[in-house]
Length: 205
Image 1 (cartoon, rainbow, N blue to C red):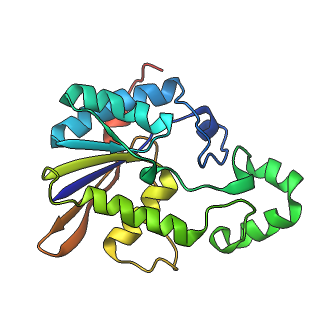
Image 2: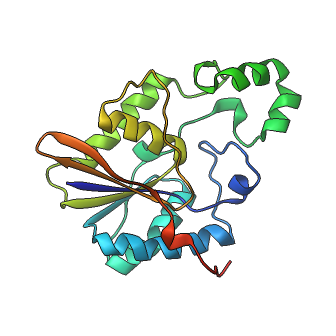
């Protein structure tokens, strides 16, 4: 079985380097163009099902591919981005100004700081496991796609490959880039990572 992972297209919050988390930020014009370009690449893999989170930036990134493939996206909150609590909507300079002590801790180790209002990691991991169960369901076509979010996809690949969840999550996903996972005969592999060739060249943004 093959799982295609794609991060949503760019939003204004991305461009401004804000923590988005579960804030429902729409795609900007660049993100809309990226979604159209992504559709062409995903169609080459011929996924039989496209999953997406219930946040609009993910749904609208998935839509051009779904229309091209004549599929109805499967929308689920299970695939929603990690919640950053009080950091959501803020840039690093704004965090430094509003929460100077928290800022100092975050610069040392982002993953091990107790952020007010954040999603507990154990709850987040349970969502990841639920998401993987949906993606790996035996009733699915041989190839499926998930259009989602950076931190969620990072942790999903860690969980899929059986890496240490408590350790560093080493993966970083560009807007509308594609990663390919494979599950076959009890083996799980990372086949392609963060492919961006389809985004190069002139844009319509």
